[in-house]
Amino acid sequence: MARKPDTIAFDADDTLWQNEQFFRLTQDRFGDLLADYVEKDKLHTRLLEAEQRNLGHYGFGVKGFVLSMIETAIDVSDGRVHAKVIQELIDAGQDMLHHPIQLMPHAQETIAALSGDFQLLLITKGDLLDQERKLAQSGLGGYFDGVEIVSNKTPAIYADIFTRHSGGPDRAMMVGNSMRSDVLPAIEAGSWGVFVPHELTWDLERAKAPTGQTKFHELPHLGDLQNLLNTL
Image (cartoon, rainbow, N blue to C red; front, side, top):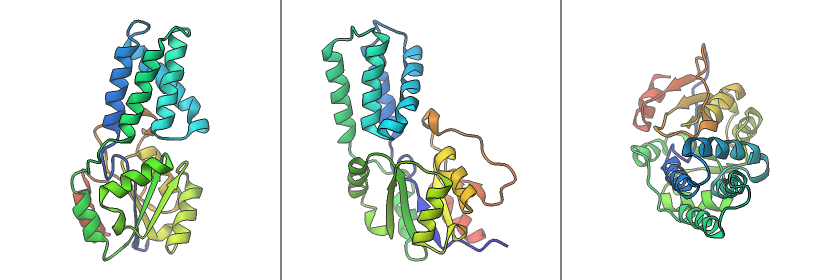
Protein backbone atom coordinates (compact mmCIF):
# COMPACT_ATOMS: atom_id res chain seq x y z
CA MET A 1 0.00 0.00 0.00
CA ALA A 2 1.12 3.53 -0.77
CA ARG A 3 2.18 5.55 2.24
CA LYS A 4 0.04 8.55 3.06
CA PRO A 5 1.43 11.95 2.06
CA ASP A 6 2.99 14.16 4.68
CA THR A 7 3.82 16.97 2.24
CA ILE A 8 1.18 18.85 0.26
CA ALA A 9 2.32 21.10 -2.59
CA PHE A 10 0.10 23.66 -4.27
CA ASP A 11 0.22 25.38 -7.61
CA ALA A 12 -0.39 29.13 -7.37
CA ASP A 13 -2.06 30.70 -10.43
CA ASP A 14 -5.71 29.65 -10.80
CA THR A 15 -5.31 27.20 -7.93
CA LEU A 16 -4.84 29.60 -5.01
CA TRP A 17 -5.62 32.87 -6.77
CA GLN A 18 -7.13 34.11 -10.03
CA ASN A 19 -4.81 34.56 -12.97
CA GLU A 20 -6.08 33.39 -16.36
CA GLN A 21 -9.05 35.77 -16.33
CA PHE A 22 -6.68 38.72 -16.59
CA PHE A 23 -4.91 37.14 -19.56
CA ARG A 24 -8.29 36.61 -21.26
CA LEU A 25 -9.32 40.24 -20.75
CA THR A 26 -6.03 41.45 -22.22
CA GLN A 27 -6.35 39.02 -25.10
CA ASP A 28 -9.82 40.37 -25.90
CA ARG A 29 -8.39 43.88 -25.90
CA PHE A 30 -5.61 42.64 -28.18
CA GLY A 31 -8.25 41.43 -30.63
CA ASP A 32 -9.92 44.83 -30.66
CA LEU A 33 -6.63 46.61 -31.29
CA LEU A 34 -5.73 44.39 -34.26
CA ALA A 35 -9.25 44.19 -35.73
CA ASP A 36 -8.19 46.10 -38.85
CA TYR A 37 -5.68 43.38 -39.73
CA VAL A 38 -7.14 40.00 -38.74
CA GLU A 39 -10.22 38.36 -37.23
CA LYS A 40 -10.11 37.66 -33.50
CA ASP A 41 -10.19 33.89 -33.77
CA LYS A 42 -7.30 33.83 -36.22
CA LEU A 43 -5.39 36.34 -34.13
CA HIS A 44 -5.78 34.21 -31.00
CA THR A 45 -4.48 31.18 -32.92
CA ARG A 46 -1.45 33.14 -34.10
CA LEU A 47 -0.84 34.41 -30.57
CA LEU A 48 -0.99 30.91 -29.11
CA GLU A 49 1.50 29.72 -31.72
CA ALA A 50 3.84 32.56 -30.78
CA GLU A 51 3.50 31.84 -27.07
CA GLN A 52 4.30 28.17 -27.59
CA ARG A 53 7.24 29.05 -29.82
CA ASN A 54 8.60 31.54 -27.29
CA LEU A 55 8.31 29.51 -24.09
CA GLY A 56 11.93 28.43 -24.38
CA HIS A 57 13.03 32.06 -24.67
CA TYR A 58 10.75 33.96 -22.30
CA GLY A 59 9.31 31.28 -20.03
CA PHE A 60 5.83 31.50 -18.51
CA GLY A 61 4.16 34.68 -17.32
CA VAL A 62 3.04 38.18 -18.22
CA LYS A 63 6.28 39.37 -19.77
CA GLY A 64 6.44 36.51 -22.27
CA PHE A 65 2.75 37.03 -23.02
CA VAL A 66 3.26 40.72 -23.83
CA LEU A 67 6.31 40.05 -25.99
CA SER A 68 4.36 37.37 -27.88
CA MET A 69 1.50 39.83 -28.44
CA ILE A 70 3.90 42.42 -29.82
CA GLU A 71 5.53 39.85 -32.09
CA THR A 72 2.13 38.68 -33.32
CA ALA A 73 0.92 42.25 -33.90
CA ILE A 74 3.95 42.99 -36.08
CA ASP A 75 3.52 39.70 -37.92
CA VAL A 76 -0.20 39.91 -38.76
CA SER A 77 0.11 43.56 -39.81
CA ASP A 78 3.19 42.97 -41.97
CA GLY A 79 5.02 45.49 -39.82
CA ARG A 80 2.39 48.22 -40.24
CA VAL A 81 1.01 48.15 -36.69
CA HIS A 82 1.04 51.62 -35.14
CA ALA A 83 3.39 52.42 -32.28
CA LYS A 84 0.37 53.47 -30.20
CA VAL A 85 -0.93 49.90 -30.37
CA ILE A 86 2.42 48.56 -29.17
CA GLN A 87 2.31 51.07 -26.32
CA GLU A 88 -1.19 49.91 -25.37
CA LEU A 89 0.01 46.32 -25.23
CA ILE A 90 2.89 47.31 -22.98
CA ASP A 91 0.50 49.27 -20.75
CA ALA A 92 -1.83 46.27 -20.58
CA GLY A 93 1.07 44.13 -19.40
CA GLN A 94 1.94 46.68 -16.74
CA ASP A 95 -1.66 46.62 -15.52
CA MET A 96 -1.54 42.82 -15.28
CA LEU A 97 1.64 43.00 -13.22
CA HIS A 98 -0.05 45.31 -10.72
CA HIS A 99 -3.48 43.74 -10.50
CA PRO A 100 -4.67 43.03 -6.93
CA ILE A 101 -4.74 39.40 -5.85
CA GLN A 102 -8.10 37.62 -5.78
CA LEU A 103 -7.96 34.39 -3.81
CA MET A 104 -9.81 31.34 -5.09
CA PRO A 105 -12.76 30.06 -3.03
CA HIS A 106 -11.67 27.90 -0.06
CA ALA A 107 -7.97 28.73 -0.57
CA GLN A 108 -7.40 30.61 2.68
CA GLU A 109 -9.26 28.23 4.99
CA THR A 110 -7.85 25.09 3.36
CA ILE A 111 -4.24 26.23 3.57
CA ALA A 112 -4.71 27.38 7.16
CA ALA A 113 -6.36 24.11 8.22
CA LEU A 114 -3.65 21.92 6.68
CA SER A 115 -0.67 23.91 7.88
CA GLY A 116 -0.58 22.33 11.32
CA ASP A 117 -0.68 18.72 10.13
CA PHE A 118 1.29 18.74 6.86
CA GLN A 119 4.40 20.31 5.42
CA LEU A 120 3.12 22.75 2.81
CA LEU A 121 4.97 23.77 -0.35
CA LEU A 122 4.19 26.24 -3.12
CA ILE A 123 5.43 25.15 -6.54
CA THR A 124 4.72 27.60 -9.34
CA LYS A 125 5.93 28.59 -12.79
CA GLY A 126 6.29 32.13 -14.03
CA ASP A 127 8.28 35.30 -13.64
CA LEU A 128 10.17 35.38 -10.33
CA LEU A 129 9.31 38.96 -9.35
CA ASP A 130 5.66 38.66 -10.33
CA GLN A 131 5.15 35.38 -8.46
CA GLU A 132 6.89 36.76 -5.37
CA ARG A 133 4.62 39.82 -5.51
CA LYS A 134 1.47 37.73 -5.78
CA LEU A 135 2.49 35.45 -2.94
CA ALA A 136 3.26 38.42 -0.68
CA GLN A 137 -0.07 40.08 -1.46
CA SER A 138 -2.05 36.85 -1.06
CA GLY A 139 -1.48 36.68 2.67
CA LEU A 140 -0.71 32.96 2.35
CA GLY A 141 3.07 33.12 2.38
CA GLY A 142 3.42 32.44 6.10
CA TYR A 143 1.76 29.04 5.79
CA PHE A 144 4.31 27.54 3.42
CA ASP A 145 7.41 25.67 4.57
CA GLY A 146 9.00 26.10 1.16
CA VAL A 147 8.44 28.06 -2.05
CA GLU A 148 9.76 26.90 -5.43
CA ILE A 149 9.41 29.18 -8.48
CA VAL A 150 10.51 27.07 -11.41
CA SER A 151 10.93 27.54 -15.15
CA ASN A 152 8.96 24.37 -15.90
CA LYS A 153 7.26 21.48 -14.13
CA THR A 154 8.66 18.10 -15.07
CA PRO A 155 8.86 14.74 -13.27
CA ALA A 156 12.55 15.36 -12.58
CA ILE A 157 11.85 18.78 -11.07
CA TYR A 158 9.10 17.40 -8.85
CA ALA A 159 11.32 14.51 -7.75
CA ASP A 160 14.11 16.93 -6.85
CA ILE A 161 11.83 19.29 -4.90
CA PHE A 162 10.09 16.52 -2.98
CA THR A 163 13.40 14.85 -2.18
CA ARG A 164 14.84 18.08 -0.82
CA HIS A 165 11.77 19.14 1.15
CA SER A 166 10.22 15.85 2.27
CA GLY A 167 10.73 12.11 2.40
CA GLY A 168 10.60 11.85 -1.38
CA PRO A 169 7.95 11.92 -4.11
CA ASP A 170 6.04 8.96 -2.69
CA ARG A 171 5.27 10.98 0.45
CA ALA A 172 4.10 14.08 -1.43
CA MET A 173 0.95 15.34 -3.11
CA MET A 174 0.70 18.03 -5.81
CA VAL A 175 -2.54 20.02 -6.07
CA GLY A 176 -3.29 22.23 -9.06
CA ASN A 177 -5.56 23.26 -11.92
CA SER A 178 -3.25 22.18 -14.75
CA MET A 179 -3.46 18.55 -15.81
CA ARG A 180 -0.34 18.99 -17.95
CA SER A 181 1.88 20.74 -15.41
CA ASP A 182 0.54 19.96 -11.94
CA VAL A 183 -0.91 16.46 -12.17
CA LEU A 184 0.70 14.28 -14.83
CA PRO A 185 4.39 15.00 -14.13
CA ALA A 186 3.86 14.76 -10.36
CA ILE A 187 2.27 11.33 -10.73
CA GLU A 188 5.07 10.26 -13.06
CA ALA A 189 7.53 11.29 -10.36
CA GLY A 190 5.73 9.00 -7.90
CA SER A 191 3.53 11.53 -6.09
CA TRP A 192 -0.18 11.97 -5.75
CA GLY A 193 -1.70 14.34 -8.31
CA VAL A 194 -4.90 16.19 -7.41
CA PHE A 195 -6.69 18.07 -10.18
CA VAL A 196 -8.83 21.04 -9.15
CA PRO A 197 -10.20 22.38 -12.45
CA HIS A 198 -10.60 26.07 -13.14
CA GLU A 199 -13.25 27.37 -15.53
CA LEU A 200 -10.54 29.17 -17.49
CA THR A 201 -7.46 27.18 -18.46
CA TRP A 202 -4.76 28.19 -20.92
CA ASP A 203 -4.78 25.87 -23.93
CA LEU A 204 -1.14 24.91 -23.40
CA GLU A 205 -1.97 23.58 -19.92
CA ARG A 206 -4.68 21.16 -21.07
CA ALA A 207 -4.19 17.40 -21.22
CA LYS A 208 -6.23 14.24 -20.80
CA ALA A 209 -6.65 12.82 -17.32
CA PRO A 210 -4.62 9.69 -16.54
CA THR A 211 -6.36 6.33 -16.46
CA GLY A 212 -5.74 3.51 -14.03
CA GLN A 213 -3.78 5.73 -11.64
CA THR A 214 -4.62 5.16 -7.99
CA LYS A 215 -2.78 8.34 -7.03
CA PHE A 216 -4.91 10.56 -9.27
CA HIS A 217 -7.88 12.41 -7.83
CA GLU A 218 -10.12 15.19 -9.09
CA LEU A 219 -11.92 17.60 -6.78
CA PRO A 220 -14.53 20.26 -7.60
CA HIS A 221 -12.81 22.80 -5.34
CA LEU A 222 -10.10 23.14 -2.71
CA GLY A 223 -12.63 22.85 0.10
CA ASP A 224 -12.81 19.09 -0.53
CA LEU A 225 -9.08 18.50 -0.10
CA GLN A 226 -9.25 17.79 3.63
CA ASN A 227 -11.91 15.11 3.10
CA LEU A 228 -9.74 13.47 0.45
CA LEU A 229 -6.73 13.39 2.74
CA ASN A 230 -8.83 11.81 5.49
CA THR A 231 -9.78 8.94 3.17
CA LEU A 232 -6.27 8.01 2.02
